[in-house]
Amino acid sequence: MNRRVAIVGVGQSPREVSYSRRHTWRDIVVAAVYEALEDAGIGPREIQAGFVNYHGEMYIETGGIDPIISDYLGMAPAPFNAGSAQCNGGAMSLSDGVMAVASGRYDKVLVIGFDKEDVHVNPLDTFNVSFEVEYDYHLGLSHLDGIFLREQAYMRKYGYDLSPVAKFAQQCYWYANRNPRAVRGKDPIPSIEELTKEIWPGSLQPCLDSIRKRSICNNGGAAAAMILVPEDQVQNYAHVPVFVDGFSIKVISHYLGKQQNYPVPGLENGDIASMPHAAIAAKEAYKMAGITADDVDIVQLYDNQITPMLFLEALGICEPGQAGRFILEGGVAIDGHCPTNTDGGRTAFCLSSGADVGDMVIESVHQLRGNAGERQVKDPKVSACCGFAGCGGGISVLIVRRD
Amino acid sequence: MNEFSGEQIYKNAVYTPMRTWQERKGRLRLMGSRCKDCGQLWFPRRGEGVCGKCNSRNLEDYQCSQTGKILYHWAFAFFFTLTGYGERGTNNRVSTLIELDDGVHIFSEIVDYEPELIRDGMRVEMVVRKHRRETNGNWFYAYKFVISK
Image 1 (spheres, each protein chain N blue to C red):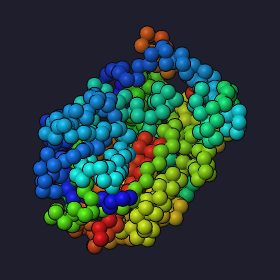
Image 2: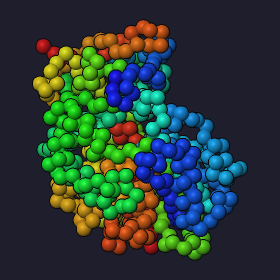
Image 3: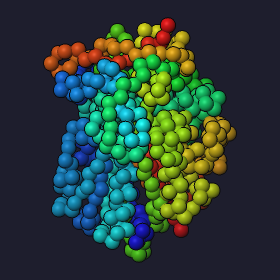
């Protein structure tokens, strides 16, 4: 890149369910952005351009949002480039923002990710329509069915039961208990027995309880915002600069059948028990940042059932089939080999699609600045963030680092 | 029907007859595509599109095998199923990844079998089943799979 790019301000909307219920999507975006402006110590009129991502137009039942964003933020006529790529969209906006600064076109760029899920007539349809559509959604299959099939494939291929999934969820609760902003921050940490019983569907209802209460944590709406500047201007800001040194996004197909042995080089031998496109993305991101997997101190990833295992293996933190054992042996704990999802993750911090990758990067910024409080990992320098869309059709790997 | 919507409210998932008609070959007969240059098989069908392997636009309709085996199954259907789906009004569904005899992979549902008895590797065959209504009130039909006898 022509110019190295730093994150100098971060902000997140309040995550209390009561806040989300009382506020519009415009409100939560403003809350996150103005917190980021305050964090950076700059005014709204200094922002030259923005990149915003949300799950999709149907999710908030509003489209063509760039003028709305620019107007409500008090930044008009600054341009906003709006995109939608579900839970992976934050990576799209951040990489676009980084390139806009790196190219020299802009010096102060705002990156926003948000979603608002609690305002639909029928949330199930809007939730599931982000898929191949004619051959899965229209036939009654959701992307979560796809994630569960990935889970079955992984467990059967490598001989696991659901205990690694439960252990990872339990660790997320442990971190969330030390994060004042986490939606589940005050919930007691469930036992492995409770989680396993609830995650493993001996009958249908416990499974539903698991998904609704334990494994994902949707507060109804959230926003995350970051401010990017070039490296030669970081001395103007108070915080320790955190640089976006590598990123790679790979998308294949939403259709689960195609994700099994997709017929292009590097993917043709991959099955749904792995994510070969994520491994390719990790290699590219590492190369761009000039690091290897051994340099990664912490990981923030999209956690939804089996995805932590798939990502830890794609990142090269674990060998194929070993991530389950790595988690069971405490590898993702704060004193483990690679502390993971230190804000509580999508399991216990917050799941909000468009804000997900932003939340991962913001937690990385807090950890790298050293201001993560009780959940602070000892002296991390490199964080890898991993986004995930659909049932694996789109993924991203981002490397953020402090010098 | 489910606890989130309270009652069946069709919204995005109401299909227009035009869309159903456009996809009739794929949904009723498992018609996919074959690249006439590299031989790659594709499902869903790619119409007059591009081969995702060699980028040829020389595609032809291809009748996929209608039998195969279960690669992976999820026997406890997820509660996020669309309104109107589920066997006889419940959400008790079985989603599977199926490998057809010609190597094409299908993401579909197994019906007419006890979910607890389904195992990976079982032989399956395509059937046509009623799914849900279109905007004009017609029933929309498409493939599902049953365990072969």
